[in-house]
Length: 377
Ligand code: GMT
Image (cartoon, protein in one colour):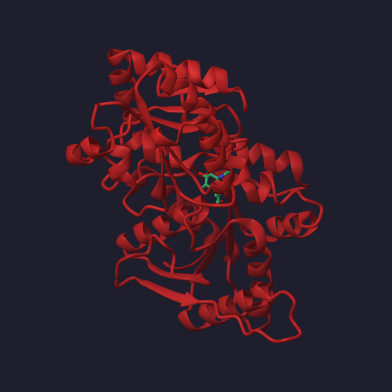
């Protein structure tokens, strides 16, 4: 198949899933065309089946806001037409789904039929999309997509609850490349970070408000009082300054390191003992899956799709949003009990295997074929 993939090119979960999906499809012999405003961060290497088409935006003094959606639509029209794509898969509804529908209409006028699949990732539904400023367009674009997928059952239900969507939503969970995300032997690295064999707690995110990074620090503050430990905070974003301030206020700076954005995240996860994800809402929790694949148990909230990934009492523990005492108590009990911790590490890996890329990829391939066939009827 010739597949166009539209996504955000950043470290965000939707961009990561879109890029990893494209790479895996290319490995399986499909021709992949990424359409984004920057080279996706996870698209590091040349692959003969992958092309990248940059959306270039022409600015003009009249524009207070550059019309990105118009430039994106024009690029989609161009790529579909000249690369003769079979299907266009857009990740994150805003503004990709409505831009894709506009491209579809333009192409239809030129006698070209392009089926559109939209994948809903999370905040496009749970936070941003249901904002009245976007809701009518997002609802319309979802209904006009030829295929609609969501990354968890919870997100599917949230979509039906918050939008007047008539389409069937297919659930295709996030996936993990177990060849890349597996426990690596990085003992020298561990010795450098925790020279006295302290327990290593880790959090990765884009430091948006929804991630509740401050809760990570409150939980860690309790952990370190009970057990020698260090906290690694990976990623960057709007809440970073507040997080740093909280570390100063709680006087935990000596035990906390902010590492910023990291490429080889699997190396850091490989030496970690516990992952904390206290998100307000999380449609799936890809970052937690990456941790689990590296044998790191997860302390998370029970919001959104987290219970579909993190099994309470098996791969980690679930708590209510904001209940930092409960999260800390679960974390301390687990970190103090070496046998239990070792079992949970194994359980985390066993459960992560259910989301193996090789298992999930065929669901996308079959879904594309179904949508292509239906669009020919
Ligand atoms: O908000 C983010 O963390 C980024 C966001 C995105 O769409 O870029 O991530 C969402 O998509 C991921 C991949 O499908 C999911 O694993 C994340 O759970 C989801 N984030 C939220 O729902 C907050």
